[in-house]
Length: 282
Image (cartoon, rainbow, N blue to C red; front, side):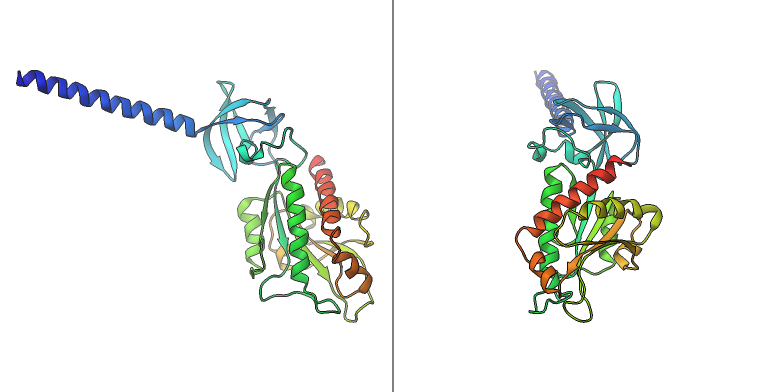
């Protein structure tokens, strides 16, 4: 009788153990499975936009996540196919995006210049540059995220961020583009006007600068074109990067535009168009 009880006890323990294993396997499989609810998401040969497109998913494609790198997922799909897909395009938070755009796969770092104890340049009435760079960056971020891009801001509030930390974010994320927003200032007020798009590394960043500059012409402040600029945030940046001076804050006419409610939206539209052109040509 005792032997029989011990036998059934062992059977019970074994059944419970098997049940736990099965439950764990099911949970693991569930946590590593996702559904792509966006049409035409690219499957690439590596974790980034620079890798070749090998396939594209249709809406509702289920993928099994094998590993992760640089915010990209290595997945198995259609039972026997493998490839890399941008992680944010299989995230349920992108449910409003129904079809990919030219910048949907891009990781873009936006850098609102200055912040916190660093006010930046001042207008003739003492308005701080840091306020307007953040307004512009937030408007651009909203526009790009709506198109499906993975956007990271170096700061999203009035806080101080060291210069070296800003390009470090782009380098760490392997960003596809880095844009630093600023407003210029002349030695004497009301003596200069215009927008300049600066690059440092010609081989990696000139094409980005030109693409953005070509669409700056739509803005109410005239463009002064592209130029070489020895600024740390683009000099110490291994990613395609530019610094945009979006007008002179101490010029009365420029500042009227800079401080208007619609200017950040106008910049967002121009940047979106420029990035769309840039990525389409890569």
